[in-house]
Image (cartoon, rainbow, N blue to C red; front, side):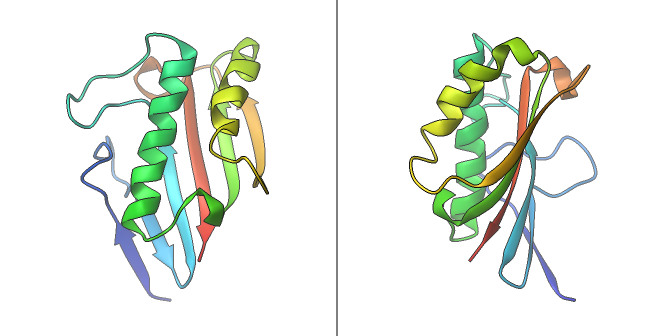
Length: 126
């Protein structure tokens, strides 16, 4: 097995011992992204919509670095700190998957890194 580490300078650097993404053959595994703005290093959490938008932008930067788009995404995992935000997160998320959305699950968790409200990971295939 040969794996390639994918890192985008446009997305936030990992905050632990992991890579932004790993490519194995034609499959890209993207680590969970939170709403950190790469330029400022700040967490963007003015409201759940803005926070989700930043998460999706971070995912997009990593996909782009690997030569992929959201059309290549086959699976997403969404983690939220409050399921009452589900519809708001879903609305922003849905803007990135207008046709043929990927498989996914959404799970409420008790706490996320840096006390954010949403984290999303994905798997994409060339």
